[in-house]
Image (tube, rainbow, N blue to C red):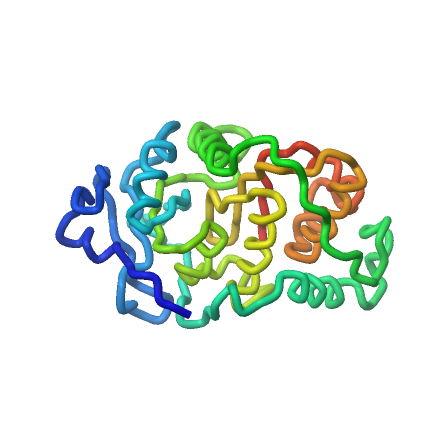
Length: 276
């Protein structure tokens, strides 16, 4: 695997990013992993809260510079990612994993004892297969900007937003689905220790549903969806993938059966996941 050049060290001496074709607000480079200093910056994030329009203004120029946008929950007392555990040294390469193989393994682990048969109807313990690709109702990057604006508008609002203090971050990654792996994000660590396997599924969703990774919290992931399922049957197939990917979404959510959860996926512009 060829290593992606990391433009972030440039920001140490050029905080505005002008040499990269950017006009950045004041921000902070994060170069510390869970076990100590990392050999290069993992991400940059703005000091101020994101505002509507921020994603659109910086997203395209950043991508040309080799950086992809994501909103991060910067809620620590020090104004940084104090509650996060970034573990880039524990991450493999997303392309080395097959998305369906990962989902099959997750599904079997959750369903093999038969204790949640009612919750996963109309499916059983046998993996139902990948959901079919859906028709795109929006450009994926345009949809991502829309969802980012919605999250920025909801910061500090009621009901409690999925990501509470959204700051724009830039990450050196080849594709949006790889952002969690690129920074060693450990949100699902109690469920999956190698977030590259999670990213393999996100890559598949990029291809089939036009998702983009829009926001990350310490244990929360929000993706935009440009091609959501349009029928209950298709939504149930997607819901099965969501259950395998993040069982807490169903078992600890307001919609505590797969059928009920699927109804909320029809036409949805974003999906949110949370791991206990």
